[in-house]
Structures are given as structure tokens and as C-alpha cells.
Length: 402
Image (cartoon, rainbow, N blue to C red):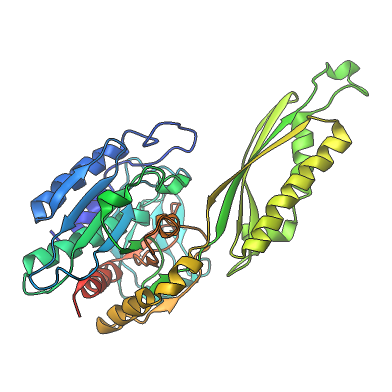
């Protein structure tokens, strides 16, 4: 089975995670893919392939003779898909892109005027959605590429390699992918996530990240007699949001620029909630952003009365750069592997995070490699067939002993 067949099989599983859930994993349906992967890893020849009670899949490929002393190298991808768009009943199709607008279905198109990177793939086969769901290349493409790469090693025993550890995680999309991950079971000294990004991208700098939940407590009075008495929680929440810097939203930032991003709002006159995320590559600026939200909340309480605004902040992950730089050979090795198979590497900062960011702070330095896809988390998601096959070749080269 090649990488494309595997990918098309994996996206048939609905593995959407749920940020409102307190279960582990957040959705039981993620375990269906996990169980299938554990069985497949066994069938292709990996050892001790299993899924634990929390939905994490682990397996390893023993080192070839003479390579036992090489530090174990790990590869990870996540099984869940984003809650931002439906991951059920995904209907992928493979099309040859000849340029211009590409109709998807459901009134949606891929337009190079909107998605300029599309122009790089004229003449190539793309796997796209039907315009009703996301595709799931984030990160089932990474899963398929890793499984195919280790299967290649098993099929070609002449390729020398150290111990290769493999893990697939649930709940990465809701920031919980490493919550119950076992470094001991994984057994790798160094690792790479294979998670998103167009072909050739290598990432070892990511956002420092936090989530925030604002609760607004109002006072509801019949509107006919509300003067001087009503405190409309929805309007109070809107006023708080309106004080966020308008130019520091995702739609106005790029590169290393941080942001505040309101993700959800709900409520009525009595109670309202606002969910948002905070991001910045620079730790000092990240800390200042969180302090700004706390100051904004305190200001709201001075204006509307003590206790009207209640803010809960929770750090999600930190910039892995400081953990990777002492082991920069991980980046150099990835660059060399890409060049050997004709892929030009480029290091870019992640405007997000990966399981590897948290794993790096758990003692396993873990930069990120591209899967080859684009436009993740929505109906415009696509991935070039050639990019997926190239990434399998990159992974095999990276696993190969020097």
C-alpha cells in the first residue's frame, strides 16, 4: 500500500477532537483510527505496536545490525482533526491542476488569487475536498507518510538505521496532544513531528501560546424599567472585545508577529462568555499580552463594578527554539535529507504549535517537518500527491544511518 492509498483510507475515519470535552481522548472515535493504526503497524513489521487507554499509539522498529548504539529517533503525527470544520464523511478526490480556479463543490473553489501557493502546483495531481468538509491532511498526511516510510525500511533491510520510534497522538488540535503522552513508552532520544506545512518547510520556532476564557456577569431587568439598573452582559463583553488592539488580530499579522484571536462568544443579558487565544514568539511580549488582558479585565471591573468580569488564563505551550538550538544537528540532518531527494529546505517559524513543542520541554527535542499540504482546518484544504511521496523519501533518508 502506498502513501496515497493509506492517506485516503485514514481520512475516512472521523477523528475530530472536542475542546469542550473532559474525556481522554476528548472523543472516543479517535480510538477507531488508533486501533486500526496499531494493527497496521504490526502488519508492516514494527514491534510492540499498541494503543493505550488514552488513545496514544506506540510502536518501534529495532535497529539494524551494527546500528544499535545510534540514539533512538522518533517520528510523531496526530490523528485528530480540527473542530473548526466537519471531519465526518470526508469525500476526497484527486484532480490534475491545470491552473486558474479549481471548483471543489458546494459553491467553493480554490482560487490562486486567494491562495497564491496554488500556482506552484500547476500540472500536478492534488487531493482536495468536495467543499463540505476539511480534508484531514492535518495530520493524517503525516500519519500516512510515517507509516509508509517505516514500511519502506522493513521492505528494504539493506537500509541501515538505528531504533525508530513511532507515535500517533490524539487531541493535538485542542492543545492536549501531550497531556498523557509517555516519553518512556516512546523511547526516543530525539524526534520529529510530521505535521503540516508545504513541502520543504522545517520548523523549530513556534508561538508561545495561551487560552483565555472571559466570563461576564451582568444584571437583567425588564427593558421597560431597566434605566440605571441593567448591566447587559453581551454589550459588556462586546465593549471588552472592542478594546483589543484591532491591528493585532490574525488577519493583520504574519511571520513573528503575535496576536489576540477571539474564537467564540456566547451569552445573554445576564451571563456572557468570550473564548480567545493569545500567541507570540517572544516570551517577554507573550507575558505582556497576558498582562494586558488582565489589565483590561480589571478596567472592566472598575467601570461596571467588582466581579462583573472574570478572566481565566491557561498556558498551552512554549516556543521550542531554546530546546532545539543546542541540538541544531536535527535541523541540519533534516535539510540534508531533503536535499538528497531533490527538495529545497526552508526554515520558517510556525504560526501555531505542534506536539513537538511540548515534547521538546519534556526532554525530547522535536522540531517539525512539513507534510506538503496547505489551507488546513477548512474546506479549501489540499495536498499535492507529489509532495506526499517526496516526504516519504525525506523520512526514509532521515531514518537512514550515515
